[in-house]
Image (tube, rainbow, N blue to C red):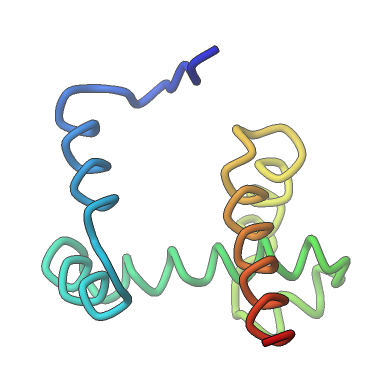
Length: 105
């Protein structure tokens, strides 16, 4: 069964298809630096870091201190990890698998 997104539209489809065409980190940097502000990129990176730390069972205090994210942001991300579309878990699991593969090589 296909995922029924709340943000699906022709424009969003085209954006995501474009992102999937990026082939490496340099291309991602080039595209996202043109697409987003510095603050938007930093905010997305911070959210992913918070999600990772929550999965690693860090406390809100530890996460707030290390990432400078507000407790409201941490709480929101925690809700997405538990009740969201599973996007954070998908990415974090794949990043962990890749890291483990690279370590064993």
